[in-house]
Image (tube, rainbow, N blue to C red; front, side, top):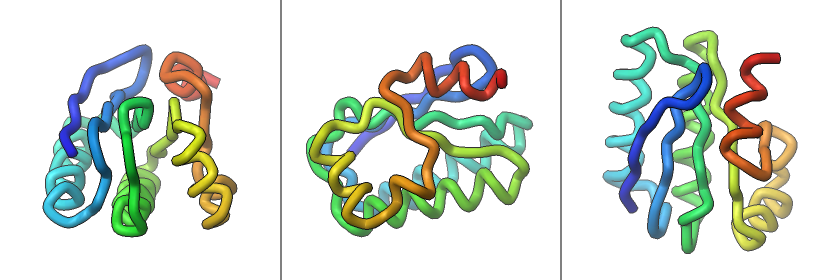
Length: 113
């Protein structure tokens, strides 16, 4: 997995690509989130549109990111989840934990409300 970050509206968009499997990726994501917190940027949108596969460790990585951002007074929201990823979120009941949106723009604009 790899990820890119960009800023949109009042949030930071983290675009995941490839397979989200946790492990070393979780460490690099956590480091990136702490950099953002240090820069006072706590509104994060994770774009899952280019994710091919996610396992339970990948879900754990998202939950860890959500916890990190909420403790810092922000939030982590999901955008562009594919049907496969969305059904995974539904089965694990995590769909009720994350705020999720069909598009990155919609998720980023949700921070303005």
